[in-house]
Image 1 (cartoon, rainbow, N blue to C red):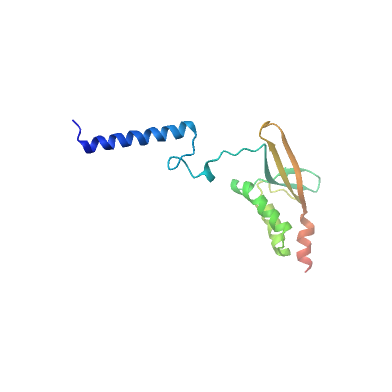
Image 2: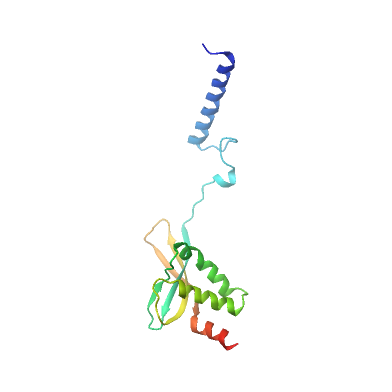
Length: 149
């Protein structure tokens, strides 16, 4: 029927498959059948914080920043915060403010300030959302400081 060499491969393949299935279903951390432990540990958090930008007009109306490219809404708020609070020069701060205003889909006139919010979402109760103001950047003041130099 089978040659001796082939039956050895079938037996070893069966043992390997059995160990693979056991480590998968029993969630054992058994090398070489599982991932490196640093990447396979389950981590949970009670809350998640997301930085968001809001544009505030002179009449007090606030609306969330909606750039043309969706990934900017997710990624740029943290970068904007670093530019504004960091050791960057005034021109970098001015460029960051102009970029936020220029990329917005609303194209609203009369932007007074850019507010950076930390949206905190409770993962146990998804309807529980809290917005905390991190920083408010006065746009006209930021732009006028550069123009005065």
